[in-house]
Length: 53
Image (cartoon, rainbow, N blue to C red; front, side, top):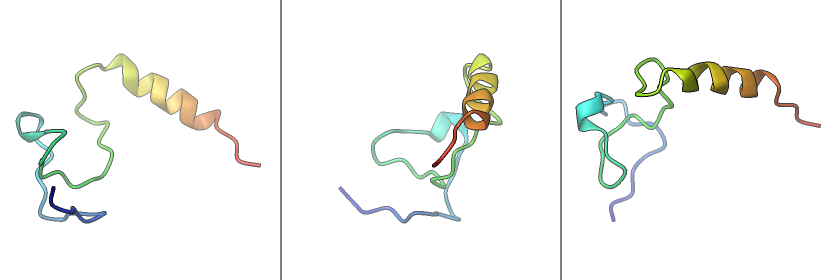
């Protein structure tokens, strides 16, 4: 398995090109274009309620 960099500026985040194995993504979490739109609000609420002590 090839090692992928933490940030890949040449990556392609299009939905049709996403893949768990051997994908060419940017490695950034993209919540602008998701399959389940209800997950965006849930993620934002969980992020706001997350506290680090």
